Length: 24
Image 1 (cartoon, rainbow, N blue to C red):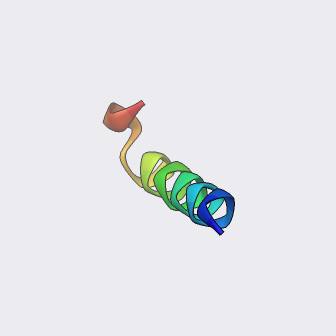
Image 2 (image 1 turned 45 degrees about the vertical axis):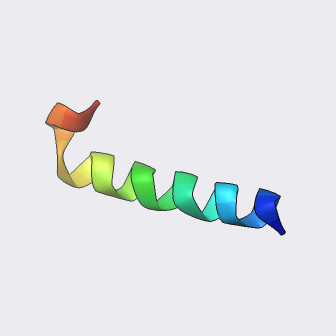
């Protein structure tokens, strides 16, 4: 289950990064 959460957070982070290019 932890793996699923990790992937979920990764996708969210990536989506957020697109909104905020400064995040890089």
